[in-house]
Length: 351
Image (cartoon, rainbow, N blue to C red; front, side, top):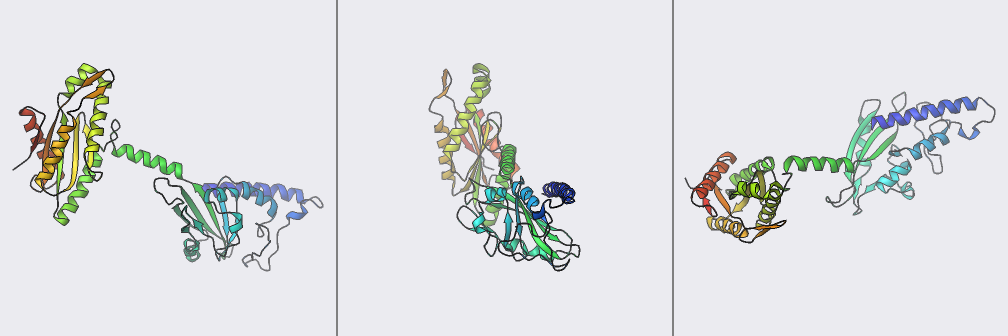
């Protein structure tokens, strides 16, 4: 924001220098004479019908820079009344010229709820520095899934005597930035092949669930799943078909559990499911049987159709472990017990 305001100030200074040279000629830019105020330390008084820039020399030329500036700009009086808004501010916020005469500046979201008003500006009046500044981010959409984020950089302009004159608000569209951040966060926390949670997100979710389970004396389960003989399938049918198989397995697992449960791929053909708030052993066994039954149906991989089995290991908090490391380790022990006994079924860890 500071760079934007500095660029604007630089453009204005250049225009002012050009106009000053022109004013040396008789009658040149006669309409651009500065507005005189009663005292140097007196804040400008804004009245209906006044130009946008009554407190600047050469106000018409400054207005052109203001109106066409690439960021949204608004001038607001010390009482919170809109003095002027430029085209970009109106475009980004949908705050129209007809609202400029309102007693206080207010911005609304898509549900017509106030998301920004004069209360954000008031604290700046108490800042001791010559140029008081703050920044806020607001979502102009009621929906988080269709967010429309803007950033407002707000400065309180003072005169040489540090008397407050008016507020300047620069508005920028930060939705592309928010989208990029969300995409990066998703990549950090999700498996690139299947879109499932990765090990990092799984550990985060288990840690959160563990804290809630301890507080509320609830149970939850860690379920580890391996695709039986995956290496043989991958080597025989090729890596592309192997990747397609993993995607199919991921999809079936995701559809087999509740939306509140976490399904993760933590490497190769190894998947882990966090089952939140399981009520009893029977409920866990029911999920395990459902997972095994999922893969009774054949899977089509391009020109190939195959049928696979999976092995499942389970640990249940608190009997199967008191923390993530032990819960995962014990579920893995149960999984390998299944592999040693023929694959294609499940085992629950017991001390």
